[in-house]
Image (cartoon, rainbow, N blue to C red):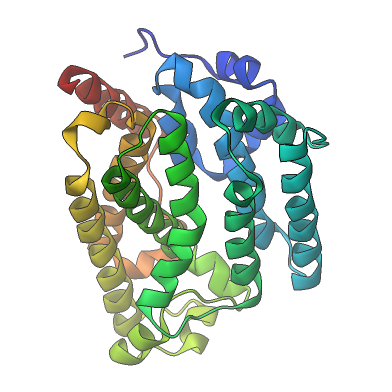
Length: 294
């Protein structure tokens, strides 16, 4: 299984942003394992992009004060401008600047996900699933589109499918974080679904894993898993070999969602995940299959 796979150290050296790669490992192992088996020529560009996303995405989860979170995101908004202008200050932005230059990426490419996360800081419990999915498209979906463009995808049909997959990956992260978010009085389950299953926000906040909560979480997990499969099926076979990282992330998310479906209430007690060796095996197998298909 280890043949040809890069080590942690090789990823850090390639990116020259080792501390931020470490944070990526700690906070989003699914993304980290997706990079382990991406083709070597892709990793140098994808690592700065995903570490940039992790820096942005972590702000709402690490700042208890919404004003502080907003200030940090505003700084990153300014840094996106400096990045494209060649004046980046943050190590991750500096690493991403060369990627932006090489692929002729403009400022809006990096501002869009920052704007989406800024809205996420100040607004919780969206009225509908459609609105929540829209947030996912504008945040992680946008990042995955950038990643697909960077590795060579140009087909608009492929890029549209990639954005939809990215949206579901972000919603899967939100679902997995339900317990921790609810403990901080932050809720990202659609209001229409809460009403449908008769779930009170007070129960989520208190961690009451009753039958209604279990049915709601199971429903959310199954819908996301099914939609992930549907969007994955839309990807043209000709582009799949370029999207190894995305395919790995999707497969890991699929397994986690399947696990949530077996016990929805568990999500309030602990964040669902897979053992590192299991994720490594999924990443290796998915990458190998993509290479054989190509």
